[in-house]
Image (cartoon, rainbow, N blue to C red; front, top):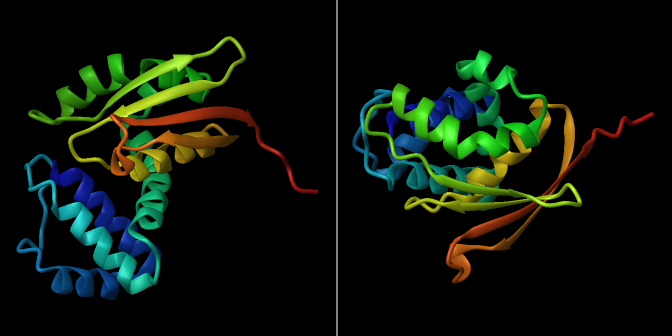
Length: 186
């Protein structure tokens, strides 16, 4: 795992919950490093360990923390990718090119040696999408959070149902997605 993701998590925790909590998480989690360098590779177990420690402090499940972090992450990724993200009209367009353009070309260009997850996206005739997520890291709740963040970015609502999960014996993680216009509260 690249340090960039751990850096983004550190910034998220510090911004949302305070720097003191981040310091406590590092101390309690027995993670040896205190500073993470964006392009450097780190053990894949570090982020889940930090998330589990955060969850204990916040009295949440690790899955909920990953979901919240993923949702927050998309904004950061979108700001880093700037023009690349802006060229898409909506979340459906971006998802259809996620694996072939964004992960395979752009991420690997920016992060040498990076191993992004794989997404196989299918658009169905009724407009809903199926997203098959595969990653050796198994961060499916983080991926689900990113899908919610993607909907937020394009000011859309999303119905996102995970119908299969590797953590529950599935071969891969599968999400059924429906993007809808954002409902305005009156």
